[in-house]
Picture 1 (spheres, rainbow, N blue to C red):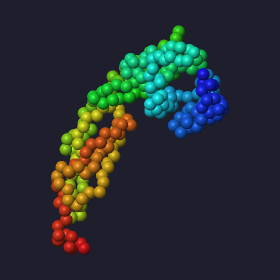
Picture 2 (cartoon, helix red, strand yellow):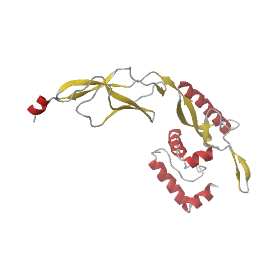
Picture 3 (cartoon, one colour):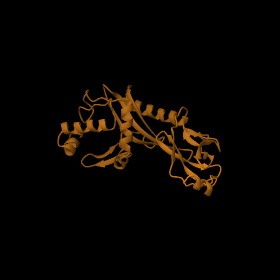
Length: 248
């Protein structure tokens, strides 16, 4: 099947493998190398981290996400076939791909979606090298355990900033500086999460009332952005006529 698809897409296996490696390079999969389209060749290698990046990219394609979420399908000639991923529909798992051979063991690249604190949280993970009587079953069970463990640590945490906490000041040459505060907002995250913050402020008028929004403080929560409004805690008065005249 893999060979038939490669010929349909690229005209030959060699051309398709070249496309696979070019895509891997574009996605930054530095530890991944493809030598065949099916993964059976020992020269095709990767890592769990790379496969997670690949899974994120693949699941962003609606048609792909729809296909891997199907528990069964009716195919020409073959008739009704079942998805080996029996985790589908359990613990929020919506895909992605099982696989196994004597070298790689049981493998499973998976995505799970849960709602935490009213917000949708997506987990993408990979299990490699599982053994046992049924390596794929072991990989599926391992993925299910990872989902439980991961979402057990995800929760709603207190506000990033205390209400009224100053995050900056507006400085004008004609008046005292005005403190700027950010809105208080709880976040969905996990222990140890690093939250980079960026301030975004556009052009400001010369006079600003107290409580006016002058920009946003953007928090990056693991790739998801939350914007907190930046507001003046005191009014900024415009320059007086005397100030304007003396500085003409």
